[in-house]
Length: 361
Figure (cartoon, rainbow, N blue to C red):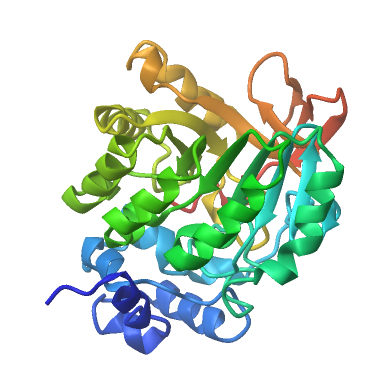
């Protein structure tokens, strides 16, 4: 019998021993798994995701996203443990306010899978699951006192690994704040734990419209029959679904791969929203492309796919300065070791380039 979503999480691979039962590991992966067990971000790979991995190909794009490599233990200039400055912009426990009319509410530290390039590795898998409404009450009160905030993004962790009952209570509490117009849910569940998207969940979410679903597909191989069914349930349930893809070296830094992904998403009625230049998270330099490379890939997409299938190319600037579209208006200067960007506030931010890792594919 196929595992339900809770069974998938219970049976998830968490150790080197667990992973090597399914995957023929390289020495780099063994060292990465050892690092993850002894100080790095913990490993969590549910059986469904393991089933998507090419067990004999170390360059498999699914494998690269979820099985750590030795490079994770390396720290280079420009790496940050909190690249988006979320701790600095935390206005109440687990509530981050970086933009005038939006706020980010972190509702859980639990994910359905641990992505090795995660920008919140400092948080994910380190605490016990879901934070109660009483623990989040200071955040709700802050939102009530600041009616200029019209939109809340709930994230974590992944909000959809919270039980339906608890998530319902959380959403009702947010809906009691009259100034909040829109709720967004950031999730990777449709492509890594698609069996979680069931009739009960969709019916519950429908009570909290307007609600937008922000998914995170990075590669065409993630568009399986199960994940497409999960997307169809959400779209048919009346939710706008937008996708954010992270540009990752050796995984999807190819215009043809991205074109296939974006066309596939549009076919599922999902709008490609952002193509994100990877964050300067410590231990992830081997995943990052240079800004010049990101711009080159993006330019090749123009005219290759419909405008409906082309997301905006963005970089979330270090230190919590906000997202900036990559293009002539935002790039002040480019050198081999750094790029200077101009934020939406007019501030200049230095982005250190991962030049020393260009050879890692």
